[in-house]
Image (cartoon, rainbow, N blue to C red):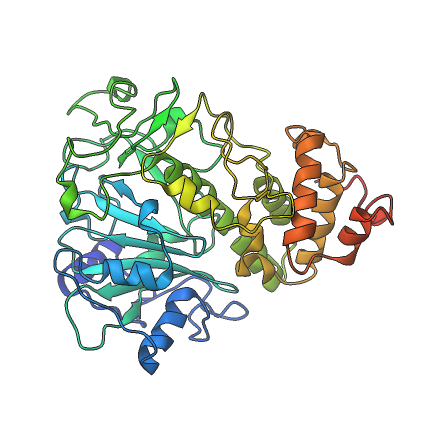
Length: 430
């Protein structure tokens, strides 16, 4: 069999049979030193499958929602994170439409998707070393439900330089959506991250909540034959719930929360940058450039400003913030601002993730040294001009109290026992 197989053929085979075959063809990074196909995995889904195999946990099938609620509960994925996408951008695309959107849920390490009436649940689960691992779970009652790894079908779209930074990853795509749910012919698509203007976000997605005076592409259909300028970004921008748009009884909540959407956009590209930095050093390539990109993204230096107060509807913001951790002054990197920016303290909560901690040396030490340079004020270059002295100090104090494994120089600096970070990286720029 050819090492490269037609995506259309693979897609048709998956839709018809829901079979996952590990030897279908070429998978990026399958060879040394990454060994992406390795079965030595420690991502949340792999860990859950081990518990299912041992009988420590079980999954409950529910009419109407299949295994979804049970899986989310075991993986501690909040239902408040639900976002609904009606563009046909999943391998189960024939069943997706504005009337039957695909439901997505996530926490810090797992993304779960369910298509109404679909054959399987879809998952992206982050392994500390390998990054995004793709799984499906047959969504029919079974004595022993089993997650199956789906490699080739997924990496066709989830490994690309312009979407996932060239590593197995995740992305949020915004498209001009036609009444049938497909991308309107001749129109652009946008990959959404924290730097994306709100005006270009959420095309093909439902969005509930308030977002000030700004328009966006969510909740809107481009009329047949109309140019992109014909998309109405304002009239349907603020919806409290989706009961007027679809049968919400078929979903776990009637919401597609705007705060959950904002966090999702940040988190997906943050995950990709962590994986990119990890892969670069394991491949023996220069790691400084992706590490610097990671640092800037981690600190929200390129974040698009909000146009006004943002308020969600599902309770996601409250659930997310409650997860902490908090310092002795009650501050957390999960605290929201939602007036002019997403978070109150501009440093990503994914700094606490196992994936961040698994970045190999010397890249991890490089990142910590550069972060201390920036947060201590030693690096005041233009790239970090958006960070006020108050923000820098607050983030540094929160991390010193709440982040395990910080280099000793951070704690020395916090105690005033050293005036500055290592001189070797002073004024380091790329």
